[in-house]
Length: 367
Image (cartoon, rainbow, N blue to C red):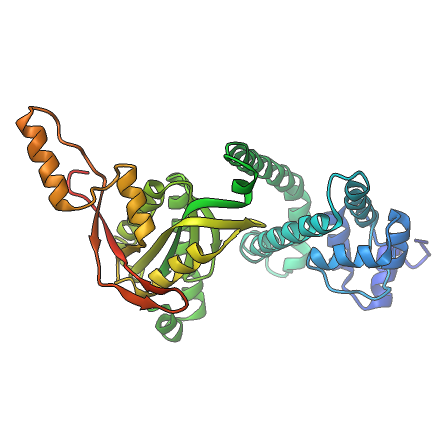
């Protein structure tokens, strides 16, 4: 890009395109490079076809920009790297597009949160007369390297944890189709709340719910799959872990007067994992159980209940537990201890899944 007497190339380009010069300066700071290429030029410099470059670009979540000169050396390098992985046979073209899509979707949400919540608070003008834009640039300049290092650190940590789960899988099929416990936690009456609460209050409630749920899921050994405002989806490798998370969610929310009631539905079985999400009949069943669960209660499917019994986290019935306790007392031994109790509920038809028998999950006295 040439630079003329009217100022920097970026400022001149901003004047030509009608874009805010400060916005362009921020973009240059964050990207670490100035605009130099049209999409066609970037694809040619990266040595990839325009079609493949467009697929990567859209997969990352960016709109088509025609042939505007809006891409940087960093964009060319990213294209070259993805294409290089395909050429080396490390990734198929379809897998490379999935890498672009999963990375784009994840980081887009992170970036939106950081701008909406994080930077807005830090860039309040410290003095009358100053604009937020005048404060933003130096703040971003200071924070950018620290946030980048932290992002890479967390990503490596998550990658290590995920890789550990994969190598422990019994076979290749289990890496994609695995037996997991899946749970949905849903705020009761959220639609009514949206009509009664101010937007700011509603946003604070959702943020508090998501934060509390995320912390409890992580602390107790589960994995938060996604949040949907009034609902969170999580998974765990075993039913006992998922059950503990569900009851802790109910107990924690019940002690918070600002929170509405919560209900949780869980199922255990084969789950297809893809791009960090989970799919399949097990997930659908957990969702349906959530919709019919009573307030401040947890419903599980039969497979989940059987898994808790198999791992001796719950007795098959209270009658059996009483018999075991009596037999142990007679022999002068300690009776078995169980963490959870299961109560069969009425069978009922569930849309798309036929007739199911839900079980009410509670914490067992003395468990």
